[in-house]
Image 1 (spheres, rainbow, N blue to C red):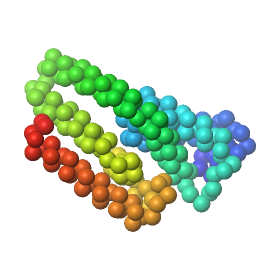
Image 2: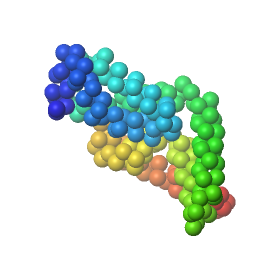
Image 3: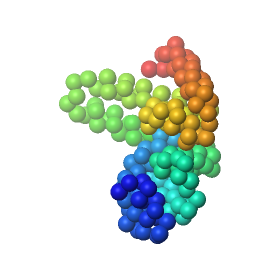
Image 4: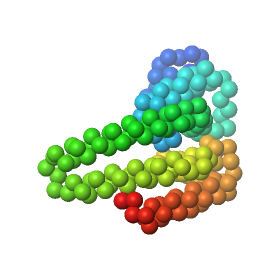
Length: 193
């Protein structure tokens, strides 16, 4: 079923079309949310809200953009609202959860027959450091970077999702990369790892 068919049937209240919409785009929405909120359960909850919002507001959908672009935009906005509403409490809690999860993974690696547990531990530590660096970026840079690197959207698609010009997206990504380089270089010099 094409996006146009889904939209037309949703406007008529079709539950089958809604199920098709969710089945087709759920992974995209959850991954987008996860890239921003860094918590799988929160991302899944936000994704549910995104689909409910689409269902309730399908009559407001302008066909001048792709359905996936509209979904990205709603997912980004909902994720940013979630972060804004729960910023300190959730990030601290998420970080604690992440540390606990990483500790469990380290214990599993150290008790398994892995030939190189130090290598696995280093990779896990690098991932945590990179995630922290990305989370410390200004909001628009973080969104643009996440959509570019994790969702692999083109500059044009990111511009549509963020309602910016392509040159603004290029600028955001340039500044995000420079900021990450600076933060990661400082970490390298301090021998964080």
